[in-house]
Length: 315
Image 1 (cartoon, rainbow, N blue to C red):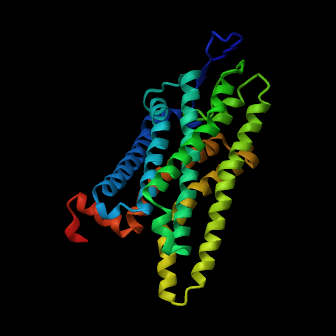
Image 2: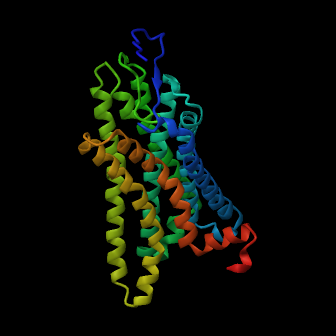
Image 3: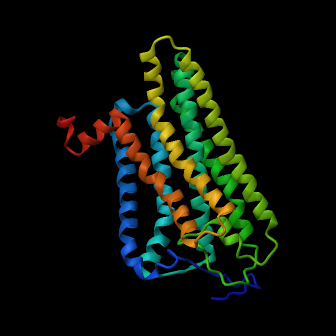
């Protein structure tokens, strides 16, 4: 579909794409995708329910896990409508306003996840390096302010992108590369000068994902330095064990992000399906695996979930 938007009164229409070359199998492919979303929803809702019900889990670390679970739910819900409409109904058209709204939420929740992971790294740093000050530093009020700051930061840096995209003209075949809208994917379809948006997008990635990853790494360098100063081997292992779950979710988030960036930068010769699958993994993997990590690695959450489903006696 060729759409030339030379008037602000004409809203362009974008064409979503499923898995290239596998269009005839979309109805079957929808089954694993539906199961993936179902696991993400059940897992994160279970985490939230257990932390809400169990008063013993009303502690800073679990509050941050709750914020992470809410972020994962938001990330899943951002891609669910168009993903299933393409796979189930072969409904590929999406109005520009809906596309801009979707990319806003997708990128906001992505940057919010990075911010929350940084906040959780700070929580582990204070717990291990400043244990005596932990209750006074991470009060309920402080956690609320940190959560609000993460949300405002993520929303603030993403908000200009759809506003700028609305000003551009689209005079090509407006076919996107994925079953959902992403900023760079929409941007490459513009026939206007999009240097501002492109540069702004790069700066946003650097000051969010780039800065967050550096500070997370720095926090663990300080944590490791503090742990090595502990005389008892058992105490060192106990301290490090409290960080294992967080390290796992950091890797689950940042490894696919790096993978997507590498494929986008150096994998132009690769099959289009590789780019699509990498984007799907980058958006779907954290919401699915994060609850699994915390359910398996955190005894209090695991016991709470088993008790919730009537299996507490087996623990």
